[in-house]
Length: 253
Image (tube, rainbow, N blue to C red; front, side, top):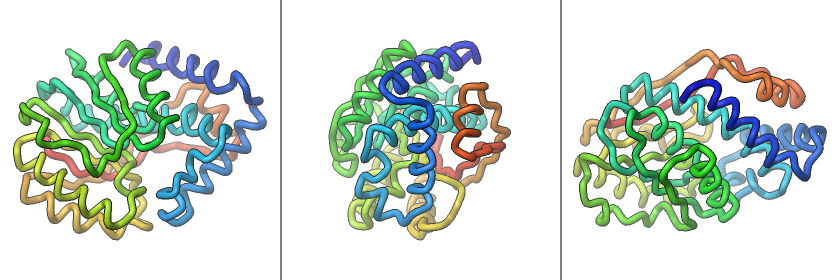
């Protein structure tokens, strides 16, 4: 994605999310949201990250572009954008940035099938697809029950779980693991992205071990954070100074 296009998208996000909020309100919300992300996982599983207009705006305007840049860098480093994919199944799609980053990195962008339990996030994901000129539709649903049996052409399908698995309750995450393993075993491309910190991620070794039988590889990533001025300004206002984009992944590509 050309930098000019990314900057234009961030400007559109600013216009969208600051229409009914002041910058000081956004800053306070971003501080609260950042604090939420260092709380226990159970709080996130309960939807605390998106429990108010301010937090939703902070999530969409700050964490959305940050996640986009991170996933774009990972996709390119893994050469995932060179694999011929027809559809990216973005499970727990949030505002749609993960699937969008992967699709836009490809020479011929695949379509995106987004799925999220949060209706606001689904609406934002559909806006993201339209704004970036992508073929995609997000819908409200339970990602644990995503219909793998309907993925008919596995070698040309991809399953993306970006910043979603850790927010699930234990029982739901266990059920999801088996469905993801089934899709990977049948040949689907797979990319799971989570923050690099290991706190509250006791499930990770089990997933890495279980999925290794399907050729899934575990990696950690650190990229320089080259942010547009708008994002730098928002981060500075909230007392944040992101110098690196970091993540850990499980992938089969």
